Image 1 (cartoon, rainbow, N blue to C red):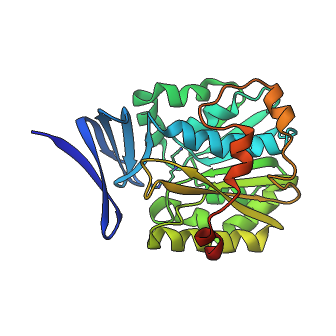
Image 2 (tube, helix red, strand yellow):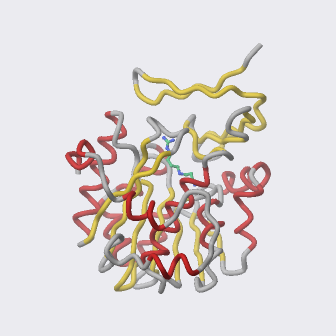
Amino acid sequence: MELWYTEDHSRGAKFSLKVEKQLYSGKSDFQRIDVFETEEFGKFFTLDGLVMITEKDEFIYHDMIVHVPMATNPKIRKVLVIGAGDGGTVRELVRYPEIESIDMVEIDELVVEVCKAYFPKSTSGFADPRVTLYFEDGLKFVQEKVDAYDLIIVDSTDPIGPGEGLFTREFYQNCHRALTKDGILVNQHESPFYDHYAKAMQRAHQRIRESFPIAKVYQVHIPTYASGHWLFGFASKTFDPVADLDAHAWNQRGLETGYYNTDIHQGAFALPNYVKKLL
Ligand code: AG3
């Protein structure tokens, strides 16, 4: 008998992966967590029935959420990461020796525990001495911070369930206050393609624009997310992600990456007309 994982990507479209076996299923105070082994994508885990990472394509997401801001401002020293319990974002950040501290605030400790058990490659960065993990609500955490971070990365779930507050006006205003004068905010920004994702994407963008003078989105191709067409938001007080990119300086570092390069960085901000219309 074949076992298949199926996720609704819209009311009329489903996405399926052939599953070898289910490795874990549990419920935290916040959400349901499942881990599966597949033939095509290696291991993957879901939160409340939505794919978060697969071993095969997580490099795309984590390269693009980290290297885009890091290449834009080489003076980033203090970083706050919200969500990101699987560790992929922190793993990429610790590759930058000039970063002094990384505070990661994940609401759900069980996500980190499960990922440590099943995704050792993605959680390897947690051992870095510059990293401090807080198991708290990111919404509350930023409320108390002023002029504290050069970069905030919001690596959250969708705006339903525990991730909801991370898409509000109040949260974006608090991020603005928590950032230094050259601060950058990057967030996972949903998909422009299927209606209900596109609406969430639009709402998030409008709210970010109200708080930040520079607010752009950039696109990536993530095979296991709804439609495969996914966006990140780049908001900042001073930096323009395309005009201020010093491609030469980033390339001099010699960092090996599976997806990110400085051409993709520039190209990712060129948007299809249907996406421009939504913004
Ligand atoms: N970030 C999850 C992005 C949103 C996924 N949404 C979805 N599949 N509908 C967390 C995973 C990467 N660290």
